Length: 164
Image 1 (cartoon, rainbow, N blue to C red):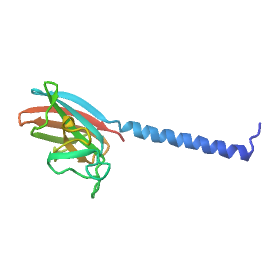
Image 2 (cartoon, rainbow, N blue to C red):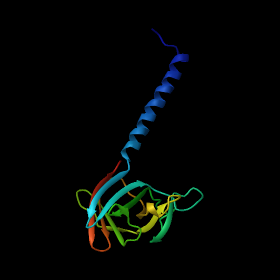
Image 3 (cartoon, rainbow, N blue to C red):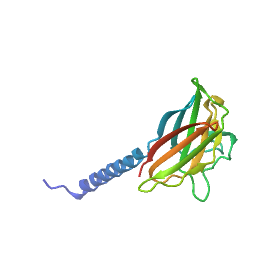
Image 4 (tube, one colour):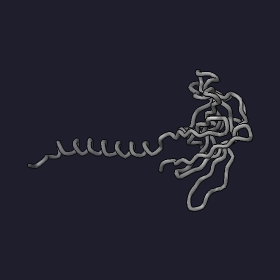
């Protein structure tokens, strides 16, 4: 059976759209949010690595509530991730803690530990019950290790990967 051009090109166009859409979906699936929980002394600490969040503008997602300055979505190297920790003690969120977050890239040679400027924040419209700590940053695809210290004495360590 011979397919004429009038029917072939629309079918080809639809096939290419589905093929391209499938490639895009594969790329998105690789950047799934990270969520890992560990104990740090008397605290339960959940590390999350999410897409970068806004702190300013009419549709901001986060409210800065202390600590280091929030890294905005603009700048020389725009952040692509939001690395944060949610801290609980006895099942309740800890709204005031001294939190240190360090991270490094893993590979054939481990990278040097980098300090993340830790801002205290909460989800806009949700209040301080959603308090968490961290900031926006730029992470290239790869494997990472993060170390979280709460109140100078309790530490949790995590390993995670960023797609690519």
